[in-house]
Length: 309
Image (tube, rainbow, N blue to C red; front, side, top):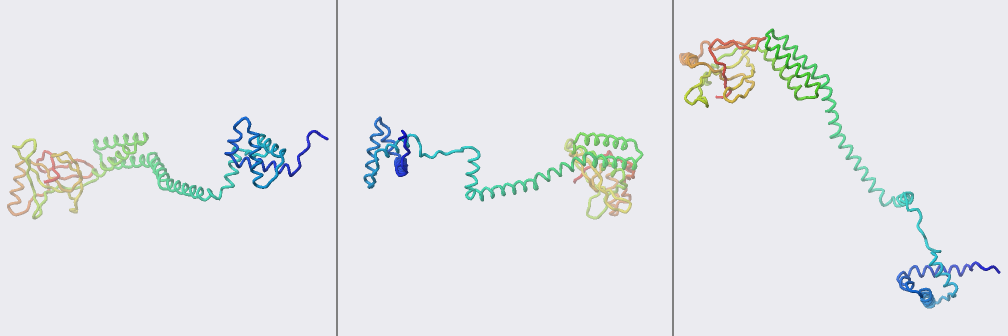
């Protein structure tokens, strides 16, 4: 007979049952297999277990089970701990995590879309618009306003100002300085409008409205400054907005009415004229023609003005 005879099927099944019994009694295994005589003590304990269940297990089967346990013959060893096993487990458990993950991805996509539509896209459009304005729009507008100034006057001073503003605006546009380029364009536009304006300056002469006022200057409490209340009107009597700078606080505003400073003698002349019959016989005291920035006065004036009284 050969030295090693394959155990019968019943013996093998019993040995597997022995191993399973030992495996499911972890405290027993830990306790009984911890000493030097663990095999003997374990065999006796197993015999007691099977006897209590009415099962007759031969000694050689117990030996096979204990040997198989030590050799891990019937133990399941997990294989494939890498990416492939992870992917497989993810696929098997997709029912648990699939919907929440898909919902999260959908929410993220919606948030990204809203961010792009509401923030990124407008910024990109604005940046592209600014780039076009700097490269083409502003240079053309600067040149057009400069040409308006040259077409509107022959005076050297405003033409020189227009050339300076054009050069500064073009330089700012090339440097990407949007604010400075726009400011020079606006200055050219204001200069062209001032040159095109044609109006008369007349004393306000309506019931209930003053034609003149006087003020005590803050820096000279012992003196008085006299002003005629005037307005700018075109040939048809319509009010014209003009830039006026207050000598009291240095502010400049576009207005159709202001106080024009005059000597006391001129102030008194107008006051007496109005007191005589309620009207000012010669209300027009200045004329500003198109093509010039200068107002020609028919009365003496040091040039100061106020905006409020």
